[in-house]
Figure 1 (tube, helix red, strand yellow):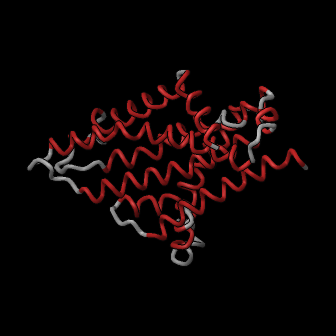
Figure 2: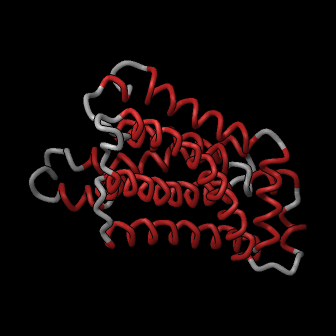
Figure 3: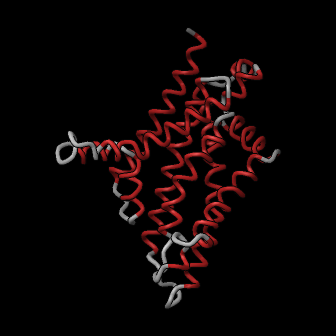
Length: 243
């Protein structure tokens, strides 16, 4: 697993992919958090990074599938996947290495946003007047969200040999699991009956809970479970070549 992880990570940063991911992510968050009116932190009367953490999932719905789309699809397209499987590696090690490399790249892209946190701390009146618990919870929620989106992206990449198709499918599924259940809960035949249960199935419900600074084990278990499901589905998808 370690060899696959290092190979994938080096591949991202030996080209422009890794740097583009960080620049695009930071640029979009920076514009919405500091420049655009209506979402700018400077337009609010209290020190908060809530706007940034509200925008980040929408950015990740497109950015993470762009990172993961080549993880298996590109290997299949070039015919190098079979060569990789001849190495003394199990399918779990291959999937795990690629998954961790993609997730590490996303986490590296998140780290520079700590500059935004420092800026808000300095701009607060009095200085440092910010809810640290909510910020810590939001970062944990963002990493959990990234873990699920990466697992979805890797799974979709394992289903096809076309990276563009993998990107489109992963973007749709990320959107579906994040927002669709909340939208379904508003349907007339569910509202007031099963709406809470339907909302609970969606990512947004759990992400919002953690972002408030309440680290509930049920929310953490939800993210871990969903991630494990898509990693298992990726393993099943790879195992198809043996059928």
